[in-house]
Length: 442
Image 1 (cartoon, helix red, strand yellow):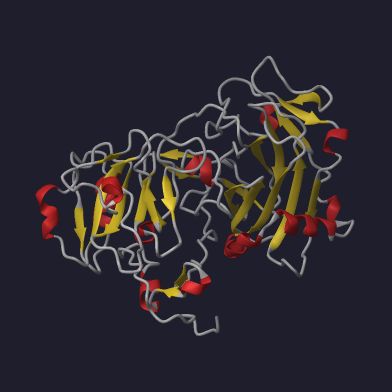
Image 2 (spheres, helix red, strand yellow):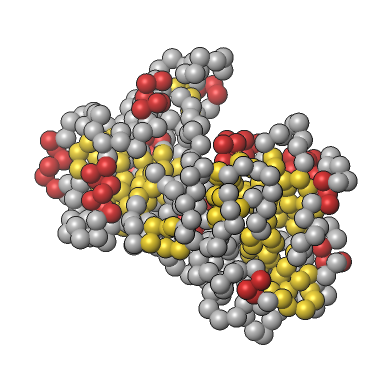
């Protein structure tokens, strides 16, 4: 299942962090600012950019905070996404420091760095910028509504001066220490001006094959990712457009945050016996006409009973249970559910937090959240004019080992492979013997 936004809202600027303002997993998919767990939010179905190799596209980010810090971007193939967890700022600086002179000339022929100030009157420092450029030079057909702020009217884009970008670096080469990295980009933040943004043109370099790629964003403990399709020809709608399709996107080891204001458990739940598919429950939420699942933002799947590995009961019912009060959702039917079943119930997402998503992800089997699964509802689907036959999702990277190393908490290989299927309710019972399911040592 893929990632989509639950609600399409324009949030005001907050004063504690920066984030991507152009479409990315965190904002376009899920409507939140900032993700503080490396390497970035979980990938889903939505693609944010579709271009040809060498066709440049703008990436824009909030730059109102963090004077003297740097924003980093890393370009890599989607099949190498599992390596992003190793991307530290020291590693990226090392990649840039070891780049040959020829690699550091990468993209110096382009438009350089730009500033996107707030609407008039502009607060951008005169020492940082020169003449404003034409907006449509960057966004063919106009600035798309999927950008987070200032989507209406004219958006001025300024070229930064040579002195303002003196510390910026771009490099493209193959470093044997990190052979999956295609390029790294580093841009300085020059002032603390809330509501201001920076913008740079990016690309999947010419000569790279068609398929799926990722541009990872890193700044001061915040992360995000832009998913990119690469076509065999130039794209005429690099940001795509919304459709009427509705889907729900799966997030493993997840529970919606019931402490957020306006969070609600909705009436109507479905028992999922071992081996049952969650598709019926998911489709019921996606169906706008369903009276039971009216105003459904997503569904939560949790086991009826927690396994022994869970060390505390959960967040619900004053901290005594991992399940809500079942009069809210299941009524009198809940006592008839089997002890090994799971429960799928609809929810309304609470108010979007200032930072991060409206759900919690836990990879520790001692936490009851580990055994639950979230499905987020998209406000709409997303599509591009051109199909991309080569843009097939990479084979999922998975593991049967979780928690801390000393815990040695594993699920069976059968469950691991079964959990990859969208047609099966995920089961995360640990306690199996630990060994590499692919036959390798590890």
